[in-house]
Length: 591
Image (cartoon, rainbow, N blue to C red; front, side, top):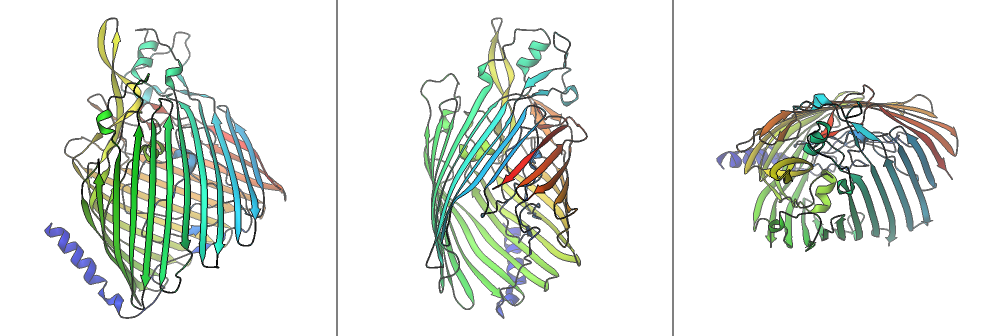
C-alpha cells in the first residue's frame, strides 16, 4: 500500500505543470489516408482456430490509424491474449458509396463469401447490411512432436488426422441518423452462428489409434455458438456547448447446442461537463445477466453452483485537466455486484501525458485498475472450445501501473517503449478438461477436447514492450511490435497457455495504384500447457503470411493469400493443431 501511495504521488506531481495553460494538442495523433477507395485485404485461408476478425484493443495511449487496409500501429501496456493467427490483417473498411461482394476458396475445403450493401444512403441517415461466411471442411494432421505421449499411426497406416469442420456466418444491419447536426441516433442488430467440431487431440483419440478401445467419431463432437446483439444509442458527436453525453443499451443473447442460454442487458451512460480549465465526467456501466440452464441435457453441467443470475454496476467518475504541456485524468473505478461477483471493488484511475517536444516526444504514465465481467458471450469469443458448463468468474485488477515514451525518432519513424506491472485478483488460465469415463467396467479420468479454467488467488504480471512504425507516403507501411510478459504465481507453475514473448511484424506495399502486397510474421513463445498434473512446454508458434491484391477493372479485384508459409506445426490451444501451409484466392466485385 505504501508503494501505491508513492506511485500515485509521483504521477500526480509530475503532471501539475499541465494546469498552467490550455491546449488541445496533447497527444500524438496521425490519421493516414493510405488509399482513397475500397480495396480488400485478403483474409486467411484455412486455419479455423481463430475468430474471423480482429477486435480493437482499448488503450489510453493514442494510436496511429491507417485507413482502409493497413494494420493499425497500436500497443498497450498490459498482458496480451494469444494471437489470432489467421487474422494477421484486419478486414478492410467498406466504401459506403459502393456495393461489394467477395467470393473465394482454397485448400482444406475453405470457402469464403461476403456481401456488403448500403441499402439507404441519404445526407442525414443511412442503413447498411453486411453478411459474411467462412467455412472450412478439411482435416488437421495431428503432429506427434506437439505431445509428450508418442502417437502411433492409425490402422490403415495413414498419419493421425482429425476432422476440423468450422463454418462461421455473421450478419449485421446498421442504422444511423443525424439530428440537428450535432446529435446522432443509431442502432444495429448483429448475429453470428459459428458451427464447428471439437477437432483436437484427446485421450479417447489416443486410445483408438493405439488399439486400446473402440472409438466413435460421432455427433458428440459438434458444437455451435449463436450470438445476437441488438443495440440502440443516442449521443452528441461533439460537445454541445459545455455538455457531452452518450447513452446506449445492448441486448446480448448467447445460446449453444447444449440448450444453454444467456441473456445480458448491457447499459452504458456517459456524460461530461467542460469548463475553461477542466472537464468533469461520469461513466456508468451496468450488466444484467440471466442464465437458462437446461434441467435435462445430454451434456453434464458440473458447475451449476457458479451459474447464478447477477447484476454488476460500474461507476467511473473522473476529472480531466489540460494544459500547454500535457493532459491529466484523475478518477476512480468502482464496481458493485449483486447475486455474484465482488460485492464491492474500488481502484484508482490516474493517467497523464506530458509533451516533451511538440509532435516529437511524449511521456505518459498511468495508475489504474479494472473489474471485468466474464459472461459466456465474451468468453466463447476468447476460446470457443471452452466447455459449456464452465462459467468463468469475473476478474479484478486492483492496481495496474505503466509508463512509457512515444518518440518520433526519424521523419517517418515512430517508436513507443513502455513497461508496467499489475496485480490481478482471481486471474484464470485455460487447461484441458478431464472427465470420468467408464472403460471395461473401470472408471478412469480422460482428457477431453474441451477446456476448463484454473484460478490464481493473486498474480503479479510484469510486462514491457516496444513498437516501431514506418510510413512512406501512400506506398509503404511497416510495423513491428515486441511484447514480453512475466508472471509471478503461487498456486500455478505457469500462466497456462499464455505466451511470455510475442512478436508481430507487418508490411503493406503499394507497388502501383492497382497492385498491392502485404507480408506478415507472428511469433509466440514461452507457452506451457497443464496436462493432468504435468506441465508440457508447447512449441513456439511462427506464422508467415503473404497476400496480394490486383485491380483488374474498376468493378473487379483478384486477390490471393498464403498462410503458414513455412508449414510449421504449432497449436492454438493444447490439443488443437493448426492447418499447415494453406492458401485462399478469389474475386472482389464492386457494383
